[in-house]
Length: 269
Image 1 (cartoon, rainbow, N blue to C red):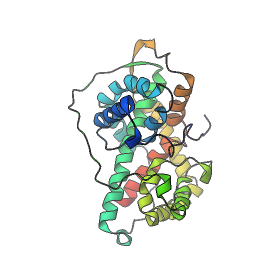
Image 2 (tube, one colour; image 1 turned 90 degrees about the vertical axis):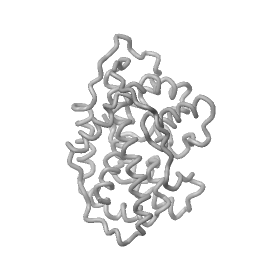
Image 3 (tube, helix red, strand yellow; image 1 turned 135 degrees about the horizontal axis):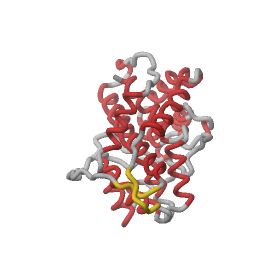
Image 4 (tube, rainbow, N blue to C red; image 1 turned 180 degrees about the horizontal axis):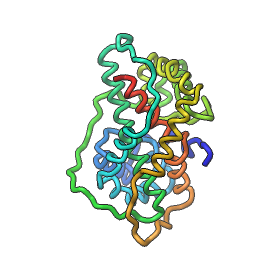
């Protein structure tokens, strides 16, 4: 399957704070269910597609509640070799900045990774999932790091840096839709510049593209194997189905961010 860009723009997709009514309720439920303090772009993108957000979350929530996405994610991270850049020099940044940066990266790694595993299983099965649900008490997680900035809040100089680092691993280069993690890390443009400088050689020598292929193969071959109900989810329209399939089964979307996010996490250690 060829690489493709997001079918929605993560930058202009609805912000969490702007969500109203049912959309706001679902966003809160997603955060509570996944135990994360923010909503990543796939859910905000689906919110702009008629009833897609409610339909997909209703169908996939049992997968997340089963506890298998996080287990499958950990198995993948421990199974796939990721290229790690040279040792990170912590003396270049304030300790508080490093703590915030690492916390943001970890949150996105968990959210993006769980979405990758759960939504991939959903798309592969092509049937309504039937899973054993773990009874867990929802917990509201509040972020303790700087908020996600809108594009208008980011200087033109920093936005150029964001576009550069977003080009890593993408066949569309600086013309790619901006993944939300980079916009969240725009509070520290010097850090993003260092990421670009350090990761670009791994991109140029194809180490990152190889890692993307390995993750995609792992997800398809060793991901979550859902039990199936007899009824297909035929009510999901083609646009929504294709959006999710491209999100999880092409290299340029969530797989790229899972790889780069976990590379940064290991690098910062």
